[in-house]
Image (cartoon, rainbow, N blue to C red; front, side, top):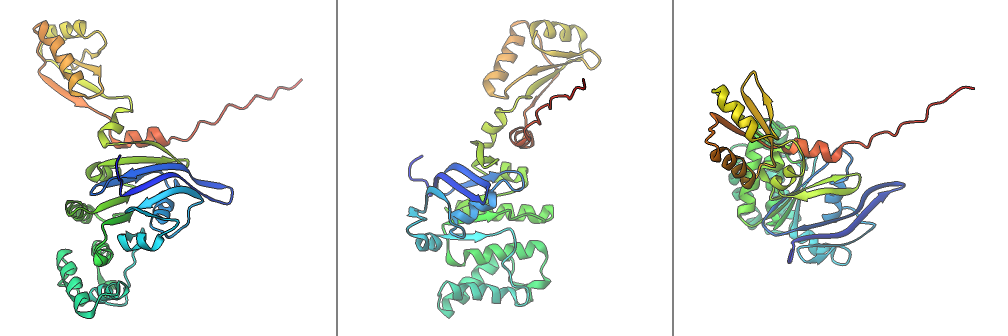
Length: 318
């Protein structure tokens, strides 16, 4: 991958004897959403903290926006925005005051700060609530304000660490729309999430982190294909057609009660065409066809399953 906007080679981090990140590699192109999945404690937040200069890595060649994290962290900070797991919103002041505080931190003039704050409050549908204390905002409103504050400095790379945790479905979908708009504008989004549906909806590429290592990486469809269990289901109303199809597709598992056949499949177009061609050559036509593919839940459970406990030798008495 040429000129990734986020690049990590051999990223390592330990806390005492606990190895959190064990030499992971990440290469993320500009203008995409990259999702990092993993169980609690897998090291997702640690990766975000390191790449956003909040924590120092033990080892690794790390670059963000072309800048080396070890030698030029200030340039990295100027290029990024970070929305952490816990809101940075100050509930004691208004939404507008939160925005103006961020403008001051970015050294914007008062006039420019007010302009940027007003634009972002309108963009995130917070103008009507701008004069209210942020403590009165709903969870979804606080999260929108949090991201609006992150955008005050016009970052081209944004780290979102579990941005929709605790939000209701409507607020979560609003956040998805915001993230898609950011990417359309050319922003690169590094996303960690506990919601596999969220990664499936948003991410161009997904990596699964487990025991300090990247267990797998690829598009959602690529990851789904590495897990067995996909199949094509054919249902018939004519018992004779069902029996003929069962003979033709001898690898299928039949259900005589429902006149249905289940054929193992990787879900690809080529595999589906092959099965249908075999039926066509014998003049068999199914009344119903459905394709079942593993989802990201299946991928997650398969890749992060705890290692089995080895059998202990049985004690014998003599």
